[in-house]
Length: 184
Image 1 (cartoon, rainbow, N blue to C red):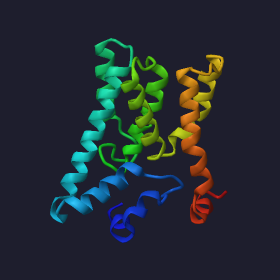
Image 2 (image 1 turned 30 degrees about the horizontal axis):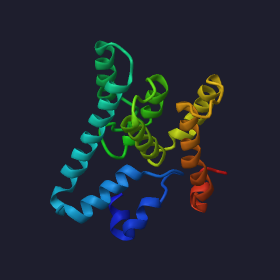
Image 3 (image 1 turned 90 degrees about the vertical axis):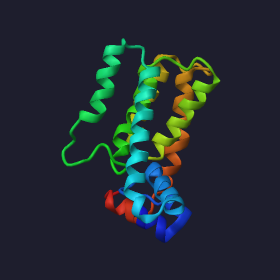
Image 4 (image 1 turned 45 degrees about the vertical axis):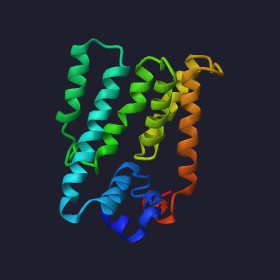
């Protein structure tokens, strides 16, 4: 991500890798390149990753209707979960942990106020532009909206619309090398 930020600047934000975008690591690379001396880049990346994971833990903590003990172990599992050869506490693997956010939206309670709705919107956009998982969860979002009878002012139909606005243009704009890598 640092090399792309160095060579392509702002346009590196919309370069796909592996068939999807990595908005959070690319923004961190651009910020680091612009603001931080080279010697402190690894520290900056690690602090951004740590802040991101703490933000997801806070999101989980405040949105899920479970007792504190369950939320504690759910939050703890984010740092203990080994996944083959992936490093979870890094910006390169951040999309795995960020993929939990749409599930938290579905399991949690609907937002109580405009600020919580804005946070959900922001999280959905970041999640959708930082990994492929929103595409995989889209049928689940549709199922929940269907269960709620597609009510026009429903929170869940809003999630479906937002997710669709995020993932469908991405599917249409994948570069040819990405499509070939995906064997499509």
